[in-house]
Length: 475
Ligand SMILES: Cc1cc2nc3c(=O)[nH]c(=O)nc-3n(C[C@H](O)[C@H](O)[C@H](O)COP(=O)(O)OP(=O)(O)OC[C@H]3O[C@@H](n4cnc5c(N)ncnc54)[C@H](O)[C@@H]3O)c2cc1C
Image 1 (tube, rainbow, N blue to C red):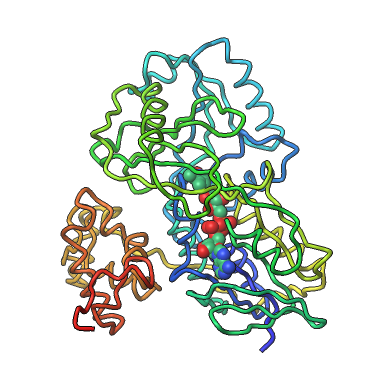
Image 2 (image 1 turned 60 degrees about the vertical axis):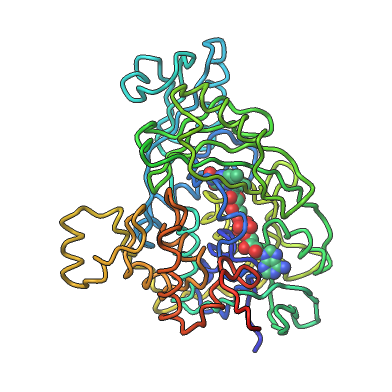
């Protein structure tokens, strides 16, 4: 079968492109090397839906961020049942002499079309952010910024794309992309797939995939960000996402509300040559704590319950989204560093446009399923609603993860929606994300996965082959 489009990479970029193309009468294949979507950069970030400030008005990422933010707020959050919290953002200064810098960010944001920006004084901040430290003097208030669960954003897009006919192949690493007169041959997971167009959304590996196809035109340099998650008992420490004034290379150390309640502090921003270097470090922890405590001195090291690092797939300062004329039919979506999570819906529309310009007919489907029902998350529903759910289905009352209040039915639902690993269940439901790090619930989840998927216990893994938890010593 010759597909219309093969998309390489099921992170937020590939997922959004797949969902956008699924509106049209096209045969689309989404290839992902990992056991599940969202296991690349898109799982390890701050989850901020940026408003669009802190990007030069001349940048591609500036425009895509503002449009991505709009698409999420006005369409996707409701259509895909996403839990988006528009909590707003504050960019704080420690010296009133820096107010002109805030004015500049405000003017640049307004040039990009960001609405509602306002410079606020200490009295405004005292009324709304009582935990800010005495060093903070004023801030730029950015109301359209918010937070989301980054992996659930990817899963929602992929689920909806698949519902609309996109084929997803996981554990399918692309090892060759060959241009043939009639289109492409893409080798992945030992199979050969054919298509008229290829979209390369391979994140950290986009340079290697582009070179495979014959367009070695850019290099990805990973920039590591370490993030530190705090206990839910500090849930109300901040009401906004709080930024300091940005530096030339990073937005600085932030205090981030997350959509699931645990505040987070970070990320660092340091280049690393290694695309698999996800280690957190003592130096990173010290940098993050010092930066966050300058804004909120009551933050304490003992509040931290978990940490991770992500690698920004950077190539220069802007995104690279273009058709490669040297390889007709290849569209590169590369260098998608921050604000890539926010920009993805707008990137997807742009890519559809690039494909159309090169001859891909975009004929709308008669029946496009725009809506995706919101999965139940007990930790987000009021108690009366929980009681009603349990009455309908008692397995909502069978609590598997006590730290995060996740029931057996939610775990089953996650597996039915596509979770194939323990991390896949964790990212979809939060089971294993609390203080005990899965100490109590992992064995229950393994059992549920066995029941649902008919797997032997030795085949249940944390994140795919090689990360199985239980070995059969007789073999
Ligand atoms: C610490 C940190 C904080 C951030 N915070 C924010 C934020 O708050 N807001 C925001 O908007 N952005 C943020 N970002 C940026 C955002 O996370 C990225 O822009 C975005 O996740 C990139 O998505 P992607 O789909 O392009 O890449 P990825 O998510 O990496 O997806 C690429 C996929 O391609 C797959 N792949 C690679 N090679 C192959 C191959 N050969 N064959 C098949 N599949 C392949 C990978 O496994 C991966 O799943 C942050 C990034 C970091 C690191």
